Amino acid sequence: MDITEIISHQHDEQRRMFAYLEEWPRDDHEGLAAVWKRLAILLETHAEAEERYFYPELLRLGTGGADAESTEEEVEDAVKDHNEIRAAVRAADEHETGSDDWWTAVIDANVHNSDHMGEEERQDLADFRQQASLELRHEIAVKFLRYEAQTAATGIEPKDKDPEQFVETQGDELAPDGGSAGASDSEREAHKMATDAAEGVAPTGEGDSLKSSPEAAEG
Image (cartoon, rainbow, N blue to C red; front, side, top):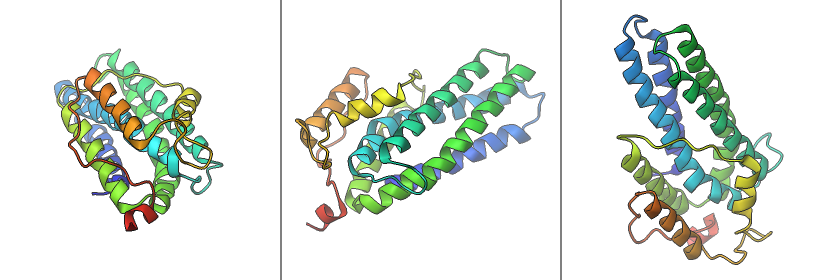
């Protein structure tokens, strides 16, 4: 497994599900509501998993992919996009399924999500493929998929993040050279496990230590 491939595959699934809604019979409100609920859960669990497991490692290793000015800009933009998608999902949930206002919110969610996926694929994923080892990409994928599997049935409560604060908080744990600034990999992992436990997410198994670079994997 490779986290960059997992994210790309889930982007394709999100595109397909928005296409399902566009082609769904407009008078089948029950069916529309069911498809939308499944899509809304996928959008939020995917976003939260990225914020928990992918973006912190991207900030640690990335150099700024494609047209991004920096890794920090990549992540700030991504978190901002997630907030815009969450706002559109909340707006849809405030209206009757199938109504004009509901469709407006669904289309807004599609637009924001499409913009986000394109930028993430062009910048974040390309950047991470170049900087992260295959072993690290596999380990993040396991954590990512485990979290989604544990939360997919009922979904999670959407929580907006301040983009700048998110990057600053992650950066507090990293030294300028990409190493540890007062927090080791094991300490960061312990913090993530404690957060997961507080939110009812079962911990990952042993053997989840992270190798930080392609060179580390070769060792």
